[in-house]
Every structure is written in C-alpha cells, then in structure tokens.
Image (tube, rainbow, N blue to C red; front, side):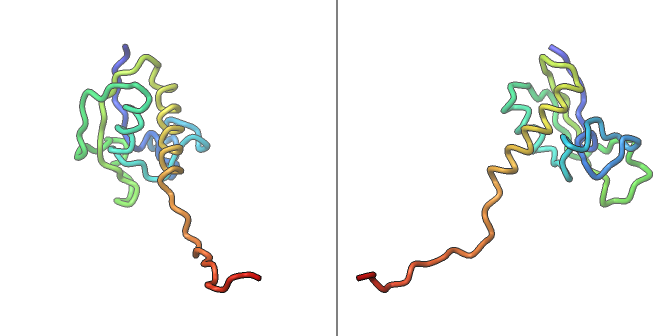
Length: 115
C-alpha cells in the first residue's frame, strides 16, 4: 500500500497547476474541504492515516486568503497518487450531486376535484 499526502489545493479547480492543482480541470472541484476528501477516501476504500485541518500548503503562500485552503491528509491507497486524486475528485463530485436539493417551487394541487 502506498502512503502519500493530499492537500485540498491539489483538487481545487480554481487554482492553476502552478499553485498545486494536480488533476485536470474536468476532475477538479471548487473549494474542496478536508472532511469531504476524507469521506471520499473512506468511501473508495482508502485509509486516512492523519488529518490536520490547520496546515497550509507551502505553495499557497503567495495567494489571496480566498484561495488558501487549509488542511492536509495522509492517505494510504492501493493506487498511485495521481490515480487516487482523480478517483477522489470523481467521488466528491458524486457525493455533492446527491446532496444538492432542488431549489424550484413545488407545485401544489388545487383542492378542486375534477368531474
């Protein structure tokens, strides 16, 4: 099993590769949270060894606070880091889709009966 560190910035679609994004824009997600990554890792059968929500990726030192995502996970996986990151991105997308609730108004049936 391989062990590696995952920073939320590696999955953040708002960042360029220069600032640490490690997956393509299609697989990246906007503003991933450390807990989301941990939940996705557990759902994929990976083991979270360490979770620290206060650490900051050194590559993000020159960015605005809006883009500085704090957090770090140490994960153990059967797959290499690149493949694991792609899998995590896809899983977080799936999780977010199931959590989104429709925002339209519900149509109510009128109290009148049809004859």
